[in-house]
Image 1 (cartoon, one colour):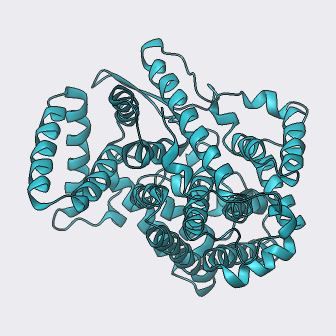
Image 2 (cartoon, rainbow, N blue to C red):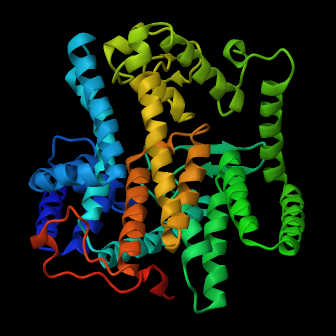
Length: 469
């Protein structure tokens, strides 16, 4: 009941031009109460299983009430056009799944609904840049709070973020470390924000914040997360430096890397990762037939998982176009699949055929086929190019670095498919586009509704650089 009331309030606030509170409620619903408010409180008395469903309802209602604006936006905005093309393709895939393949409607809707978070871009583009910037800065502060709680879990042994029952905990006795997987929702963009876009007034605050974020990145001992963030950040920093400073930075990076490798737990995780890669690269090794992998957390397993599903999808023209359709793991049709690469499902006692949290591309290939996967890649290339086009706005750099990082991580995780990632991307893109417009003294997009902006004006400069601690 509480969730329903919040959704109605958020919608009412939006159409009353009180966007800041409206968007905070929206993001809170989309991210399980920022992992701070128990979902049980928000969902009490409701027939739905996720607060994100109410966030989707928020998006749908706004799009319906601003449908004429959405139509005009489709003609003027290439990013929104690609978003709608991809969503339309997945919708057609859903119709194919329901009426041709005979999947249950519930199964189709559960897979399809998460794609609607891409439409949050349209919602954000209806909001003035000052409100978007306030929302982003608030989310960054909330992320810092989440980081503190996340780190407190390790010494206390108590789950402090999200639902304790659904939080994965890995007690790695071999390295003497307990790994919690409930990382702060917007950790990656917040890290890049405080590294490259935020203007500090205190050196102490700067190093405390950056230190907190970096420790949170290292604490769960995710090899790919640590390595990819280090590589992406280093490439960006090197691109901004002169030749002499690049040499100094590389030397410093080598020293820090060697120092980190002296920590036993980190050394063990890195060595395991290098061993996995070596198995893939060694002569005569073929991941698709390599079924003696360690399915707990290895790169060889992920490659085998993707290769087996890709081979299955391209075997028939219909699957090449739509994959196996929008199918959930618990549907009866999933039981007819015979994939060998997959994690053991404790509920069914069988190998998981559809679900995986280890590689996003396996899910994409299965859900939307090769054609849909290509459209997905094109869409994200367009997002990346748009960030680069508006790189004069600091948040654009944050968005580009985050998108690049999550794209690389998509080979070892599924974050790129999360609604929260899509919200962060579209929010940063909205700030970037509207910030650029503010610099050129434009007060509105070609497709905005006059009543919505009649009493609003954009600031003369992007407020992203005006926040202080």
